[in-house]
Length: 334
Image (cartoon, rainbow, N blue to C red; front, side, top):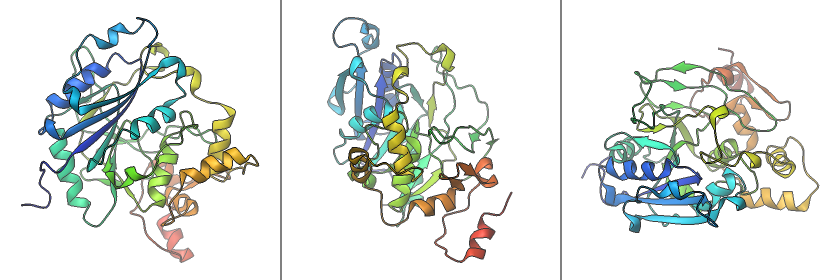
């Protein structure tokens, strides 16, 4: 049997954090319908909705398919505490599936998405800990048609950290997976080797993407921008976002979350034992360090600056180097 073939052993855990999202029911239908092996797919959902009344009855107009393959952690939306809280809880629904796909609750899929992802990651994953991520195409919920006629990806800085802000628009077409220092949490596909570790800090509110990637990176993971579009995403204008669409807008930031992130990225060390314990429990790996990540990504968390190659979103493959001249050559300005 070919090493990069897709078999019944290649089970996939699809991790979803959903906040009062009417698209979830349609996402689940499309997820199984478009899969090559729907029997391989298992879904874990942190489902946040109105559990005390009938405000959210419209979230259940379409029956969930394959209910024996769907695990739900139901939480009343009033108890929601941000996307990290929800992603942390959905991750706990994993039951040793071989692969993991992380998506948003408003997604659509290409035909045979599961086979494509598994076969492609196996080609690269031989002896490595590889993660695919990318910026999905937009779909229209009314007809499920994507709006981008060609395959494009957005590279560059996308940082939702309190110490950074920015979204450097740099659309390019790619023909093969490219090394990247930034994840897009609406599409991540990885070996479930990483699922034995908590990948999200429960109290970090919406600060999920860079802490997540730092965890993967320090444990020896390789993050690649995927060159195919197999998952589409409903990109909604923030001004049009209503209370039932995505997440609680009241839980995006707070002082505790900022202190956690500042301590994790060594911007400002906290004297609070609780903050220290939370960061320690997050358990960054020992294969690489935060400083290694700064060198690779071009981000300087203490000075709150980034290098030109970071802004352009262009990265070479990670190299274990210590010679200062070699490092300067790697990070020369584009």
